[in-house]
Length: 439
Image 1 (cartoon, rainbow, N blue to C red):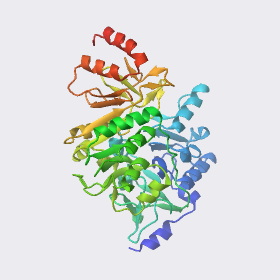
Image 2 (cartoon, helix red, strand yellow):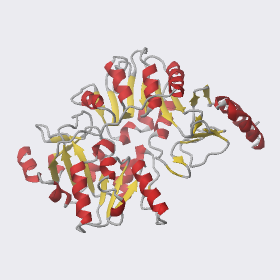
Image 3 (cartoon, helix red, strand yellow):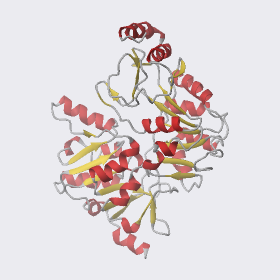
Image 4 (cartoon, helix red, strand yellow):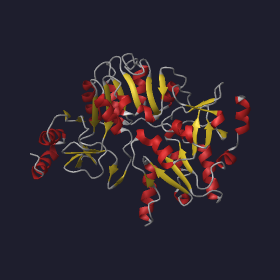
């Protein structure tokens, strides 16, 4: 097979490449950093001109790249968003529709991250994939770079694959490639990758980071989310040794631990010597570290987030954030002010996987208060859906300490969680626990 000839045959400018997406198509769009700016701009322009309609767009975590092109409010009658994980883009669309008294233009699909490939391929039956990839190698393979997640599984089944080749997209290793023979259209477009500014930790983040670091043993394997709190945890881990990485999201904090030699994967029981991730989002240092790094492997999220796979890492420690915790320990991590704020993501995947690991720990952390201290995150009843059930919750941490809920009765849980609340809310929580018959 002449890979170069195939490449040349399928190389197009953005408009004819976007024309491969037909009216009525069910399209999987890359997550986060892998959203292709030139392709999405061309698809949006085709929709504006009335050349395509009834496009159903399925994805997790849209960014400004999509928000400024295919997810513009005025295109919602031609390009329909089906979100599996909200960002500020969907929240703005929903708010505008609410203010104008119109139906919500965004369809939200509840799912765990690990299940998203099967959901997209089997339940929805997406027929197209659009995403950014790294340049083709000598064997005709493109790397999905920062985003293997659901892109790799969808690429195995989709009838139409259109890729945007960006020389800035890192080439990564693992189960993370698509061959040029599977690709219908190729666009070349050099553009800086989306960079997420580092969130500065607050005093509560630093306190929680120190508490969690004390719970992590040398030789543990880590999963971390993004944001100020996980960054504070990573900063507090810099005196540890022989940590490993098995995470859905590879973050700057984890990369810095690897660069410092703290996370060397030396004691990992699954993929020893190698860090494993499904997608990455962060700063330029993170992307540079990824590029050509044999010490890292990207795999589909159906593998990385499989609780049975996660549990094969001895001393697995998952660290996730939540928005609310009720007095029984149930957590809502996706709903705010009466609306869908994000989604469940992979939280429950790692809660279950880490607890199933030999010597593993599942940690859920949050500030004790929200809205500048005016409301408690530990509440009598959740305001939204349960993201992590009380049956699964293991360790809870706030800046006021930590507790292990496993083996505790509902009464013991209520008392332990009230002790982690901000002092000014403890009396009201105690009274409510009494009304519920918990204490």
